[in-house]
Length: 105
Image (tube, rainbow, N blue to C red; front, side, top):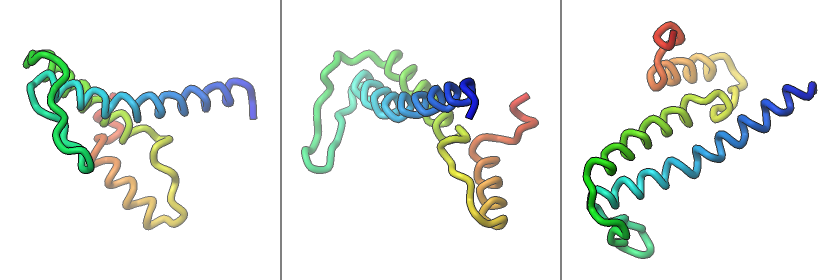
């Protein structure tokens, strides 16, 4: 593997790790800023630790949506299937979530 390809692979890997952390963090902070408690199954409700501020909470909710879409649409997050029928199903699902390649340009 060439050096630039190895660096690119590491950057992609760390980008996915960052997205896996940022998506729930922005969801929690956005909910708390909007005044909603965080509900954990084993713990129950965790009341907001931040003062209520609706506009930044809504902005964080939008950012979380963008980050979640980036995570779902990244090629590295969806491994290649082994059969062509699964490949076709993956392509149609990916197109439904992320849009077609022509809509991105």
